[in-house]
Image (cartoon, rainbow, N blue to C red; front, side, top):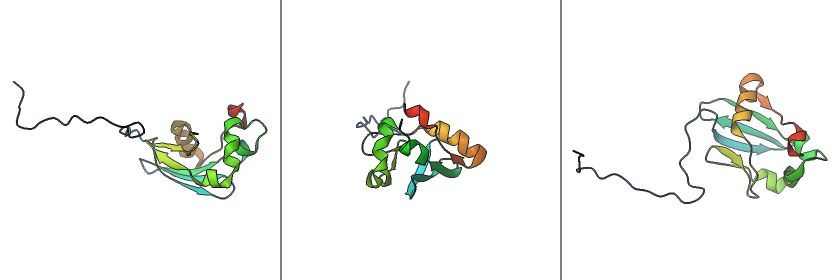
Length: 114
């Protein structure tokens, strides 16, 4: 028989308020720097940089061209373990984590935006 002394919490989450996975490759903190570079720290403490300069300035930047606006780029934030911007762009944290774990930096291929 189930113990009724401690009621279970039944909580619904608003969109954008989903509980974050505890996967080590989830981003814990991000800070935007000049030159379209981000400093990131992951949940397990791994830290490094993400150099988006080639992607942002590429003729095939696609939606990432919006980040050429330094005000938009500087608005980078972490939502549910993912680097995002107010315009809806985001970066895959698992790819960043793998590259930063090996070399300390991640520089996405500008062709991915095409």
